[in-house]
Length: 222
Image 1 (cartoon, rainbow, N blue to C red):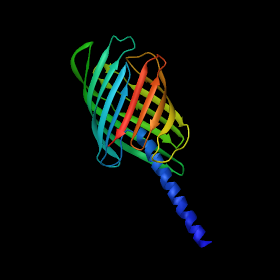
Image 2 (image 1 turned 60 degrees about the horizontal axis):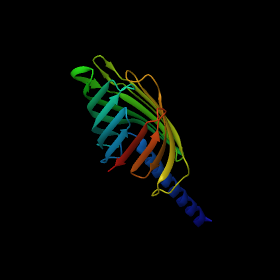
Image 3 (image 1 turned 45 degrees about the vertical axis):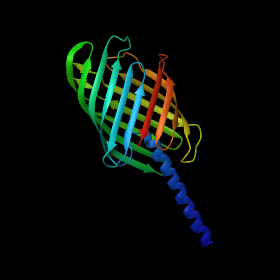
């Protein structure tokens, strides 16, 4: 009986360890990787194209750079933002079968546009909150993109589920829906259903939004 008890405890520990690994894998949807890792992310569509790279100095802090191209719905106005970024995990809750996080994401850089001369300094502080299990994911991101005479505040909400559970070294398919909106360049909410394929160091998302525009997202941790 004692031997069986020890075996049961060992199996429980292994199961919890694998679950923890899976949840940290799901956390790849977060804005930074593990300590001493590099993360690259991309979000590409006709009106929004973003490329990000950062380095995790600690398990909670990352520094990097990003380039963002923004275009109005009528294609009349464009913005190009180049910025240095800082990311910090403000809080994490490791629950028995889930994980929740609060992140600060901020940037400082310069923005140019086709409707004004020269460049302007722009700040982009923001907060992301997410919750996930091995089968469910939700997140909310709010960022303020502010420069003199410009307000392009951004709000994004995501929710989705995995089709089935997989082992740690297998690719897991998810269905994700995102609703997002940006002030000053769009007067409507963009809604995009996407198929996500996620592995232990990367994910890829493909979808088409409610304006029939294709979208590709990716993340990779080195």
